[in-house]
Length: 312
Image (cartoon, rainbow, N blue to C red; front, side, top):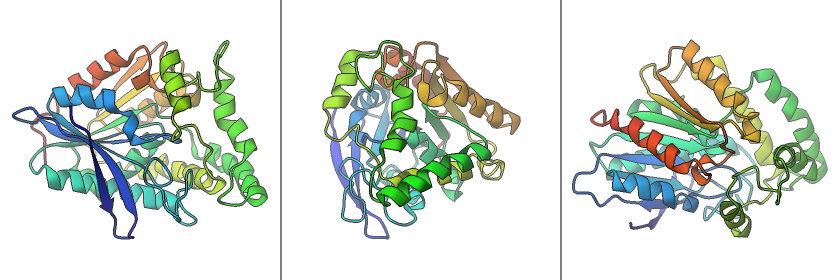
């Protein structure tokens, strides 16, 4: 398996670092663009790449602004940017989809993402870029009605006033990562909510590109973005025939023990979106790095098999 690093410059002169694992099978089946979550990076998806490459799928994992190797003066670690950060990150993801399709003409292109990456992927699926997609995978995702996000903005705005837009906030960490950590019985670390496998948790903790605090501006942009992408008006922009795969753990504190993903499934079903969902009873937040990873890989592989030949 080969891993490459690509550097893609957007129209705004921002450089996106992209982790690329090309498949070496004689006749490739398709290409997947995978978007990582908050406080991590695209280089962590080598195991997924290995599984997909063996089945003929190329994998591209870009680092979002303020993450991994996509760091610059305007987007320091944990900071999307001072203005329009969320929209810029969504646009970056759409650019990577276009790049992947350009590099692999004729192959079906699937967009997927984990956690925050799933929210960004959903936002892209609500734009014209969705017309070029063969499928959408949302992993470790969540869903709440608009009033939830309006209320969430209040303490985040106060934290931004107190700490500045580029500053981090102990209050926000306590409301999010801290709250999720507290829902795991007898945790050995503050990040046991990610996985039940100690080796995976330790690898995350020891990675200098993981586990950092994001800026108050990034949190505000994210919550405002979620309010938009989860609205009925935005969800109705998803192409009605676009297949969606939902993957989650029922022991994931971030999605209220899977209830948030199940709510998203219900909403998409109500909108008559073609949805397939898999939930693992003991899966925590990072099901791709948990005890159920092989089953998650298999679920993705079986779903992809039904998409083959649907390239645009």
